[in-house]
Image (cartoon, one colour):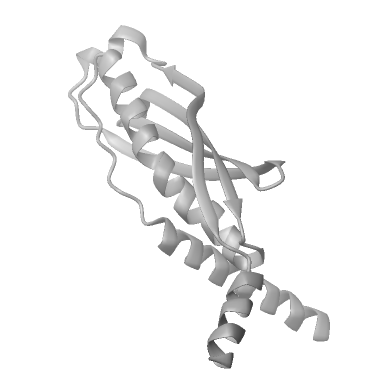
Length: 165
């Protein structure tokens, strides 16, 4: 009985983790067709390049803005057919997470929620520009975060080795 009470007391003292999406919104959108109408005279064999970036900002206590930026450049041979940049953002209330756990939530869970919205915006804008639909493949944000951590660790170890030498 005493063990149950001690366990309950420990649970009451541990911070309760809360994660809630407050709002999702389109923060910025850009679409360019540098070639103009000339692009429609060329054979459609596109080369698609996708860049991805996330930014986080603490808005208030336990409230964070996460912005996912997708930049899609589509080229026909050496010429840019179109360029789309979407910044899809969201407000997330996060409590009970600190350090590495908070960083992981902000860099994996939040972008994972935002990505389908950004992907839909890209597809809609591209088709309104009179181009074939562009469905972007899913992204594994957990793997990207793990790779970024591994790269940061390698850089830190390399800097440490240089300092010791």
